[in-house]
Length: 205
Image 1 (cartoon, one colour):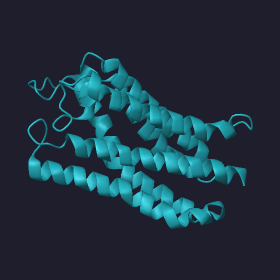
Image 2 (cartoon, one colour):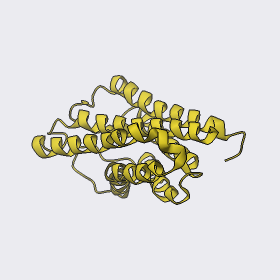
Image 3 (cartoon, rainbow, N blue to C red):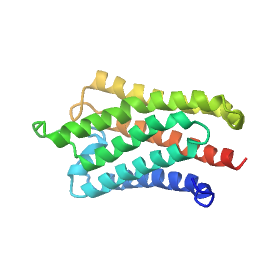
């Protein structure tokens, strides 16, 4: 990171993450045919305003890659997982899922989207835990230890709630697991924002 660009990077990560959330929220009103209680967020990409969902995935992917750059001074070896997650979000944007109300086509785009989504959904809590453990050992992150682990538990709780809902209620669109899916993504975003902001402050001091 350059000395000029580094102070702005935390703001960029936060802005991109908020952009993802704002676009996702807007799609609830723009595409009401996708019942948020029963439909996954990826399905917005096949609707009338699908480009907005694709843009949202790109924004979140950019936020993850920005976080990678922010953490590089503290964790030189931690960049691989963040790079993979960011690229998976770009892949989710580029390759659309099939609509859950239509017979599965098993198209290449659908399969690639599913693989990318699996990397993000399953991998993020693991990645967050590994990064939190390593950051907690860093002297410049000593003051963050009190909140870093509770924050890192949030993605795990959200992921568990999502899969518990799928197990109990069934897969979408039959099972009402749409809101757990959305809350899980909000939890992931909260971790990205908090860690990015703390990384920016740690870099200053």
